[in-house]
Amino acid sequence: MALSKTANVIKLGGRVMDDQLELNALLKAISLWQHPCIIIHGGGEQVSKLSKDLGLKPQFIDGRRVTDKASLELVIMILAGLINKTLVAKLQANGANAFGLSGVDANLLLSEKRGIEKHDFGFVGDMKWVNVSVLINMLDSGLLPVLAPITHNGSGQLLNTNADTVAYEVAKSMANVCDYQVSLYYCMDLPGVCESVENPQSLIEELDLRGYQDLRTQGKIHQGMLVKLENCFSAIESGVNKVVISNAQNIAKALVNEPHKATTIQLKEAVN
Image 1 (cartoon, one colour):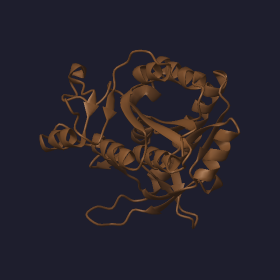
Image 2: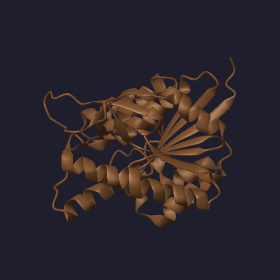
Image 3: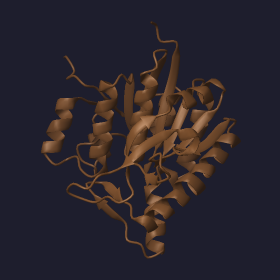
């Protein structure tokens, strides 16, 4: 069956959330794009800043946030409240009929509390299910969902879930709907995956699985980028058409078909 619909899943993260010029340019490009779009946003920088202001020390294990009870309340307030509604207001100002929600609303994202193996991550949720029919109904109604990565376990417990993983799960679920061709964009600070994070000129424009494994062995990929890239390759394996990693400026250009820099993820090594 031929694919008849195109959809973008865009994960906003990094310091772009604090750079109003870049953020506004990206949101404008998203608003002008003529195909359905779903935005998933993080907000880790803002959460960490306010945590420190309140005397709560942010904790991370392998790039993943540890969420105790006090931190969970803070995460919910910032992600599902302040950041989510700010993004919706900006999109509305650009003419997009944005609709802000979290994974709890309409039973959209079901998760389970991460088990304790080597580490206790606290109130962190691992994804189990995406209620994709809700998203499709919203897109078909002309709405632009803006999704905060707060999930629930079905028994009343709210959980903090990694936004990169939520974006992957949403894109994968959309790709499994036969008439959608899905592209997944990860927005971060750098123009893409670089061999050296200190040198943006070391951008890797195409990254296959072997190249990723080599970089990881060499210790050039670490912390949160590990999670992001694992999700990228899983997305391609799961039927997502295209996965792109770059910064806000380049993703905005990509959406309007202007020349841009980025890393495109592919499973197989390029044939020369």
